[in-house]
Picture (cartoon, rainbow, N blue to C red):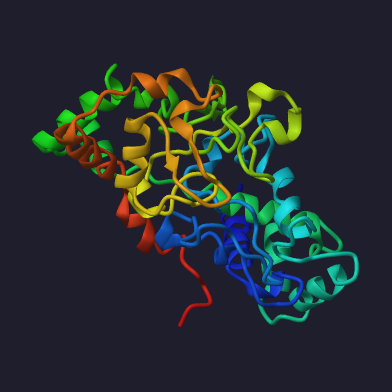
Length: 331
């Protein structure tokens, strides 16, 4: 980490010239005003191809061990970045063997980038190459920290939460809502790691969102950890997302199929989702594979109102206007 490396990464993150066809940047699917997530249900790549999953927000990603919706194995940001840059199923940034050098040539011929790469990677004979591109973007992503929500301010003794927010906080950490059982830890994500070590291993859960066949089936290719393991019990198990900044990150769930935070909370409180017709019809409440804690949630209308107030208090709205995160090319 260095100031020069982070600033280079910020420029690269927001630069559409980094995609194969020069039309899409990392920020196209990870926008600052959405906590570096996406307002689309599912991400769309530079060639127009849809990704099967929703773009996960990147705020506080430095503290995550698992960086994907359904890959439990810990991975560094540098390793994960190969998928959006070079992946073909689906195409995201669309960099491939046929255009890799062309993309780097755009950077080499830019008036600004040669000096920035030299400052960030001064010992290299030819500093503009993909390894340095990836390391610079990862350095920038590690600075995307949000810790100034109303909840954080209350924890620091700077403000007091409202009565509704306090009731919601008690519900969140209590045994009627069970939120913290899946979305626990400092990042409200069920996982947490720092330079001191792993404090909380990644958690993956089936929330009863689908039940296509009465046996708990999810629609392909969005079948959770099952896609990797092939184990029936892993059907529909996805990473618990961070609930920090959750007011900014709609739509919700792995496939962006739930438009509002209120609707997401209703699904949890109901013990799953019922889809009445169409190709995804089924009663997720009856799924034999869903997390048993889902059925233990007990919330009335006032509880939901209070819990929503607390969830909204987890959002640090200042991240949307933080100049160190902003698009340097914006006019």
